[in-house]
Length: 177
Image (cartoon, rainbow, N blue to C red; front, side, top):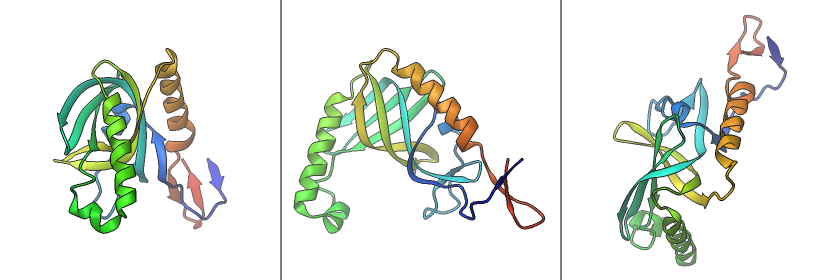
């Protein structure tokens, strides 16, 4: 076992964690709405995935719901398009910020088409007892090797980073498993 001399626990908070669908869909739900989803006790607040868009449900000026299939499963995604009509956002953002967010969301929505290979980043959220990505960025992939490279990165990161769990030992130090 490796000794972790860093007193700060492993945290992937606010980092876009690259996950394959089979891993993403098994994230542990939070015990309360104020807590994030977890993977092997490590909080996961943001995620990145890459795959083929296989489902698209568009409600203009409200949302765009779609699914990304990476070959291991389908990740549900939601892109909110209600920036200009949301009272929640209006209280928290300036009108200029809302316009920029609405424009960015509209551009992202235009890229989401069934059959397109895309990279999606966003916040890990729950909906109706499941896990989904609330989308902040969508990028259409043109590199034919992007999917296999994403798979390799996900496996490598899971093995060498995400699978390291902080476990307190009997001496009070923290060991990594």
